[in-house]
Length: 221
Image 1 (cartoon, rainbow, N blue to C red):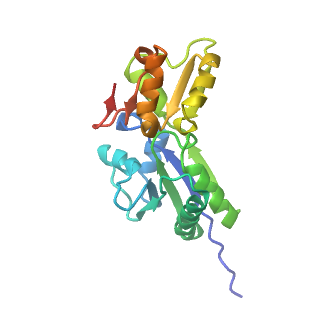
Image 2 (tube, helix red, strand yellow; image 1 turned 30 degrees about the vertical axis):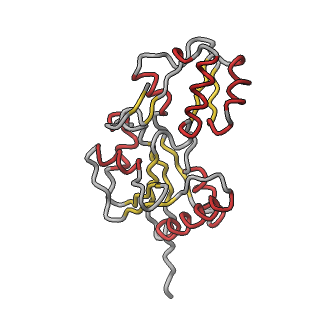
Image 3 (cartoon, rainbow, N blue to C red; image 1 turned 135 degrees about the vertical axis):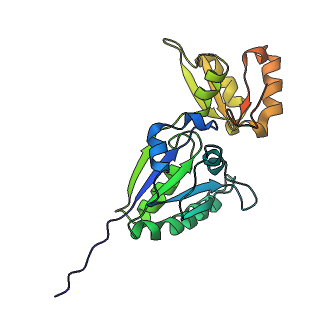
């Protein structure tokens, strides 16, 4: 009588790469990236836009495994479009996991901080509850930015708020009196408005803008 051999379900692993400098890849993430028995997947905004996470691995001279693939996640707040993108990404990844392969999801910064990794993990588990998920912590862009300019992120009893700038300057105006430090993420669409707001309150000299910290094309003022 033939016994059916049950294949172990692969694991989805969020591999945090830090904000851009390959030197900030942790030892735990580096060890995962040396594996040849796993699949790499990495996010991009469109088929014409390269994956920034994948670029970090290339600057680190890390060769991808034989199987690797980009996953498209459009820059939009449209819930239906995002749900379709997550569903398509999950459908791409699930067959590898069902074959017993671990899938490494490459993430710039930290996989638990404003990243698509959590959305993908939830979508996959909705399709297949047996999927295991692991998250490897990484360096956040805002702590790396402070370190690069020798500015403390917080001291002693300082309070900190981390806010996507999409909430608008009204949210910044409301939160500023309550916190010692405000971290505004994804500010480019509102940059001119924010600069005007900071100038009007005499705060521009205390503000720091850094884009792609640690990367060759880092930009700051």
